[in-house]
Length: 238
Ligand code: MD3
Ligand code: FE
Image (cartoon, protein in one colour):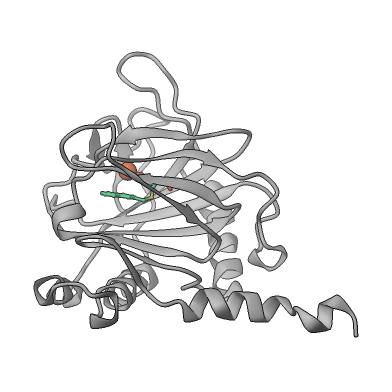
């Protein structure tokens, strides 16, 4: 018997999905393999459309003059350091793309999938899935050694959870604490198809991506090189 028959790829992926939601810290739940390969490929195709939209993928320039190595395209609201705007005034002044209805529904399903009793979350968090309505997404693209330093996401005027979806190459995700950008932190490997939800006590924790692991994109994810991360947020703006 060939190795392919003994160790089919489907079995490996099924195991990731079977692992179910894991509580990393209060309010921080990792759901390995939540998106199917077909869903991942469909989202990669949408990503291609977004990057050809009114505002191109761009590396934001921080107030100190440094450029981020990650490039981003936004939906719903355009993020720039450190505010949300409807027009990309730091890029080309064009209006941001709409936040798609399918992504609102996907965000609701994501919070519900993460905040189940299976994950051991508090009942008060499980209630956050009801009526979850994200209105902004930052779609990050990592390639050629791109990384993201430890930071907090606090430009939103809401403490609603953030939903994160990963597609493509795996990465090391560093989940810290709410007090300092240094230790203690927990490193978690995020792989293609993984979901992570950050709410409740984890919503304002420091976090970052120390490295992407080149060459680890599964063949069936639709993205041969690099890593896409979608984070959905509730801005609390109107
Ligand atoms: C924890 N993105 O866009 S996703 C970001 O993989 C960002 O591109 C990383 O950090 C990425 O701001 C990490 C995981 C994540 C996103 C938002 C969070 C973790 C979070 C907000 C609060 C706490
Ligand atoms: Fe962040």
